[in-house]
Image (tube, rainbow, N blue to C red; front, side):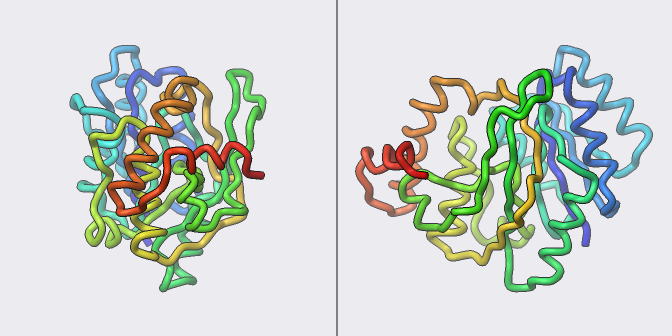
Length: 243
């Protein structure tokens, strides 16, 4: 089973090499790897090109885009794999067998269209500062803004054809909208893998305090309303008390 991995990146020179190598060194070698480089100016483009020249599984798209979700959508549109996942330019897989376990889950469960797991955040020293587990997730928790970690999400390509791509006019909330659309509104079959799949670096847009508190809540409320879920804005505050 071929897997499309999309890396949306811009100016990730310090980390893009480890990101790309963590994809290309996966034990599951049937990979269609698309790197969408938003015209990096920090030297990241040279690193991307040097790696892509040595591995034909890598395809590079280099053009300006209107945010990360447009970049991801470009990769989905170009993807040749039966399943699709993302690994952004400042993240990496936690081990060489992550993708193999994802593919195995899809192959052994023909009724499952979505797979996700756990991730963790690291500081610049490589120290784990936060674990993000999906162990207690149920689709109903989306109603208070709780979703699985997006970097662990893998979807059958056919699902995007049925239910649409990411909404590009969101700043950081289109992944929540996608989870809501698939798992709550359309009841798509899913499976959680009990493994830590991705090491995420702090400093991304969604980890910045203003966006975590203000933009995050505003866009989650918008997604709920657009998907026909009538909830109070205050309902989203419940997740801060959830354990």
